[in-house]
Image (cartoon, rainbow, N blue to C red; front, side, top):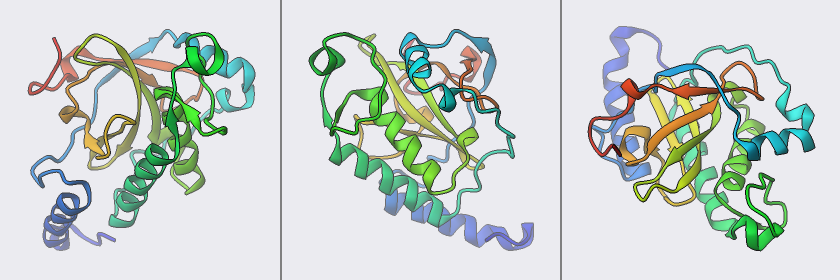
Length: 205
């Protein structure tokens, strides 16, 4: 645990090296925080999920600030990303349910992008990470297709857990265009992601 500003520098350097070893990302790729705007529309799939699971979408959160990203927390985040990506088999909603935009926990072992995100959010919440730091996020991939990922908000920046990547990445390093994410103070509300927070490198125009 960091004790003082004077004692932080060696530990920050050690943390950077740990990030390189654990995630495969260069130590220089420390993330930043996304800039969010005001309330925006809820994705239709999440709206239907909330109708089926009202208790999960009516939680008013006390936002204590971003997660303090210790080495133990990073290892848990990385472990959950790997576990869910390898244990859930990819299947489209159309093949799975016979219709599009069904958000559900992949309890039968199958799911698509938002189901992976829901499961990662559930597992990390069970490990004690606040829901205010576990935010399902809607993005657009370079090919223009919509996609859902889980953002983990930390004091080292925002990181992305993605079923299309084995590596937990800084949000700036994904190449996605970020559209909206869950609010940090209410599980049923969504906020826009400001255009001026878009990464300058690897962004999708």
